[in-house]
Image (cartoon, rainbow, N blue to C red; front, top):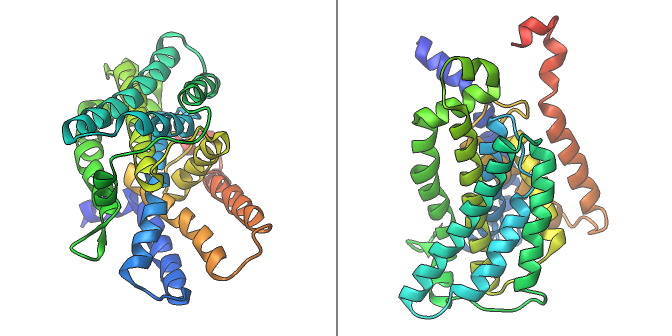
Length: 325
């Protein structure tokens, strides 16, 4: 019973994010003109998957008490790069996908090296590198264009077994292959320890630097997966500055909605994924209920403000600073 209560306490915020998403999507599907159909689910899943990958990337860095404001630009860079090289035969497409993912991991490694060895603040570092990554994307695609292997793109955005979105299958596969091994490894535990108290983790002999570096590398990799999926959806590449900033901003909201503390050391990538699904469903609800498009950014901004404020609510219950720790 004690183990069950501990698990429930640790995953309470994730379960809340799951319940919030299920509740809002039920309202969305019940009010959609087409009803709850595989096509409606597929469309919603394809739109939400992009934000889910970026939110997952953001959560890994925030758990270490950092922040990555370049995730959106890495997504844009991966989209532009994929529109150049994820084409041709099956072998060429495979190598192109590997190159896109490697480029994202490299971008994350650059962020990690500067933060760890340059001793710069993550927020300043990732703003600067984000501008660099966008410059590279603009160099690759000064104008929208390019293409992608349509066979692969159609398969990755289709429905498995005729009803389940392949984008969710890919998302689940990434969770199983990346997040689960990482969170249960020594490096993953060190990331949580560094987010709770970096000095204490270092004095305990935990690999703090490696944990932070790995978090940034995986963040870049996951953002690149999001950019790859954007190419699969759009069949083209575009260096869209507004899109990069939007995904970065919304990833922070999704992370907080998913129960990841902005102070670090608490939360999970799974919670961030459901936070992203819930946040994206808000936009779908505004569409279904026919809100004026001019008002939609206002409502999303209000939700974003409330989401970021959630992490501060616990401070009102703290009577002294020692209780917070």
